[in-house]
Image (tube, rainbow, N blue to C red):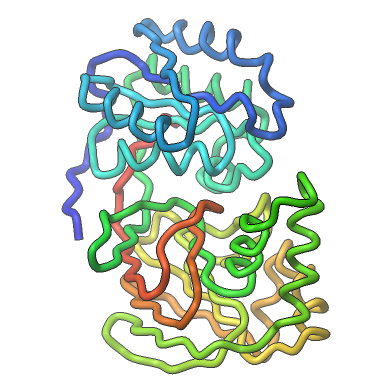
Length: 308
C-alpha cells in the first residue's frame, strides 16, 4: 500500500483544469469560460488541458502534475474525475471536482454542491485560502497491471455485467442501450461464485450483486454502499446473494435510498482490504471499465487533498 503524507495546504503552482465538454450530454458546455474566470479569481495562473480522448485526458493530467501544477480541477462527471484522480492520488497536489456530468457521485459524496458553479466557488475559496482537506481513496491492484485509484464504488456484480454488455452494443444510442442491456442480462441472470478475502479471512459466496465502496453511491445517486464513509479508512463491501430475477427487480429500486441492505439476502462487510475473485467478471470503478477479476482493493486513508 502506498504511504501517503498529510498535507493541509495547496502547493505553489498553476491550476490545471481538465474539462469534458460532452459530460452530462453537453448541458454544461457553456459554463467553462465562467468556470475558468472564477478559478482565476484565486490569484493563480489557470491552464486548460487539451485532450480528445479519455486516455489523452489522463496523460495530460499526469503531465500537468509532473510539470509543477499546484492544483488540478476536473470539470465533468465521475468518469472525468476518475481519470484526473489517477494523477493526483498520493501526492500533495490539491484536487477539485466540479460536478458537470450525468453521474457526480464522488463530488457530491465528498461534500461539494451539486450545482457546478457553486462547487467552483467552493474550490476557488479553498484555493485563495491555500486550504486542502484529506479524503480517503481506494487503491485497485491486479497482478501485471498498473495500480488504479477510485473514489466512489467498484461494481463487480450484475451492474458491472450490464455495463460490459452495454459497452459492446452499437445500437441503440444513449440511455436506451443501457436499458436494453439490463433486459438482456436479466434473462441470463444467475448467481456467480465469488471468493472474498476480507482482511485475510476467506469466504466463498454465491452472489448476484457485489460492490466495494469508498463512498456510498454510484450511477448518479444509487446508494449501493449506504454507510460507506470516505474518511474512516475502511471499505464497505456489499454482497447481494442468490437473487432471482423477480427479487432483484424488487430490490433494485431500494438501492437509491440504500434500504436494500436490510434484505435478508444482502450482507455488508467493513474491511481495510478485500481480495475479490470470480470467473468472467470485469469490474467497473467509478463507472469506468477497470480490471478483470481477480483484484485487490485497499483503503488508503488521506490519499487525496480536496479543495474544500
